[in-house]
Amino acid sequence: MTSAAVAMICGGGNLPLQAAEAARRAGHEIFLIGLKGAALPAIQDFPHAWVRLGEIGKLFRLIEGSGAREVTIVGAVQRPAVSDLGLDIGGLVAMPEIKRLMSGGDDQLLRGVVAFIEQKGYTVRGVHEVAPGLTAPEGLFGACDATAEDAAGVAAGSGVLAAVGPYDVGQAVVAIGRRIVAIEAAEGTDMMLRRVARLIEKKRIRREGRGGVLVKAPKPGQDLRIDLPAIGPRTIELAAAAGLTGVAVTAGKVLVADWNDTVAAADKAGLFLAGVPAAA
Amino acid sequence: MTSAAVAMICGGGNLPLQAAEAARRAGHEIFLIGLKGAALPAIQDFPHAWVRLGEIGKLFRLIEGSGAREVTIVGAVQRPAVSDLGLDIGGLVAMPEIKRLMSGGDDQLLRGVVAFIEQKGYTVRGVHEVAPGLTAPEGLFGACDATAEDAAGVAAGSGVLAAVGPYDVGQAVVAIGRRIVAIEAAEGTDMMLRRVARLIEKKRIRREGRGGVLVKAPKPGQDLRIDLPAIGPRTIELAAAAGLTGVAVTAGKVLVADWNDTVAAADKAGLFLAGVPAAA
Image (cartoon, rainbow over the protein chains, first blue to last red):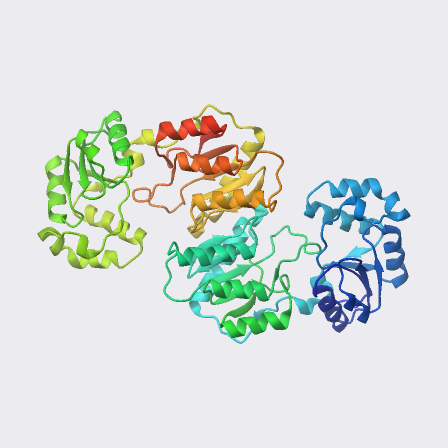
């Protein structure tokens, strides 16, 4: 673990604040750059400054002034219209690049932003790298234990995720016993969990009592600097509503958002929480 | 292709009638055994007899009397209560076996029925074996052509299905371009297609105009004698509603129910229909 200075470009939600605290705990000197209209006012509790999305010139002056050579992008940002960017001179100079980036998908946009920052000589790091305390550790990290059946489900689920990885799909699956009952593709984890609950309710999935696990992992080719898989209190709620008995995620590579709330929700609902090694 | 005599145990729907015709075209001598309360009266257009589900003694006398050494089970049967079986002496003798079979899942029940028939010295054949004209042939079999993009989607989809096969999951996927947007597990193909339509409507999947393919294949370990994947007019409707441009299925191993209607629906909606070789 380095303890380099890190400039954190902050979007919305609590995550930037949690990341800032965790990065500081990990020994990093941090400087937060809040995106106006997205970042929470509470970033002012840390060394910080504000920019509009289009103030590219100002953004790089702020990064430069912070002394950091490493940059992390954290928190949600609504995809803006070009006219809302509030472009400064630096932004206008980068305009052709910006337009090209904004014509693609979200992933392409973020990949472009990363490349753009790296062109300027900075290293873009994933939030899991600078704030390791926010990702799941290896082993059980809630109060509940997993059964042998749970473990078999986790193994089956991890296997499926590894198998589909080369096709750039499948961040999550639900296994009941060894049976895979749902595989996530474009719908996202929440919708998949709701589907499982519905299928059980309609008896399209037969199950005696509670049982089953959610297994979540990054895709092999996923750029964790821009797209870190995450679980949070809502994931636990939905998993509990589907009658599952636990959630297993790849240790070190899946974010546990609102850590205390997530763990408390799992403990309360009787779900185990586990960090498992990445499948081979 | 043999042209052995075949006894066809017939459940509900048109499929038994279509299978009987196709088996006859393929040179088989056929004898239909209609399950009362399930099979359509139109089976009387073929050499036939009727039994109640529990008339096991009568069933085997009918098979024996038909001269057939091969048996096929075709058409839908609602899972009955033991009290509704109408057990005859043969059924009562087999009662412990029947109770054991009925305590498991549908698959287990059907596997047990197959084993039970084979114990009596008959060979159970899949409907795709005795009525080969009902499954998709290799190549395009509707009026519409597939584009290179469609072909790339079919390749990606087939790859994913082959990859998850060892986990006994995934009879179908939807690919848009090369991107896998949905993988079927317990929900079934219809629900998966509805999900894709909804995700596109909500812009959770970005797509320019129409595009995308449904790819459907048996699981590697699937017993095609009791569980043959199928497409039909409804599959085409749902694929069209999701804006897809075609459907590809494993040649010889996926049933095309109501053949003429299915092909007509695809032609009308502008979807290609293709039979593709099983993935390696």
